[in-house]
Image (cartoon, rainbow, N blue to C red; front, side, top):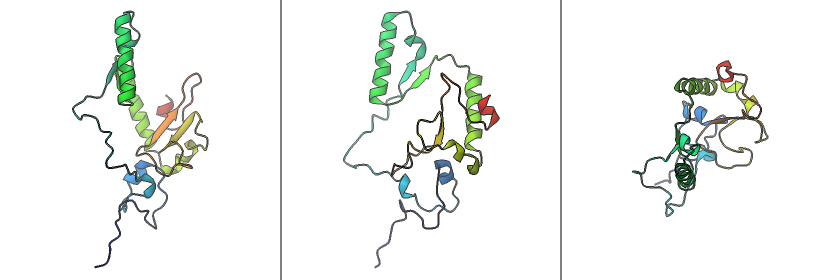
Length: 169
């Protein structure tokens, strides 16, 4: 019996360059994962936390509290979330729900722009104030992250893509 070559994690010969996860996910004829998106871990190494542990929540109002004990406890919880999880959910931040919704809608508009409009936001320098991409430095990395991102600096100077207009607003 002839050996079969697995499809997973091999670059298809006639696939155009995949520049973002969204494009990868929407590829109609994709029958394998491009090798630059295949990440292998040591199967004997476990990094998973208890699935019943909730994502850490940081109450931002406690970080600015006048009560020193509350503030100290909040800082410790923030430190633990960063060390043990690497991320956290923020509550009581004071950002209006309507503004958060409008921002998510504008970001969705950005990621749904035609692919030919996005390269201007993929600068060579990773320190640019506006940067769109799928990984930190695709020119040097062999494996890309399973995410697309848009980074903008808004302080001390406001930087934002000029499209879609709703994002700038």
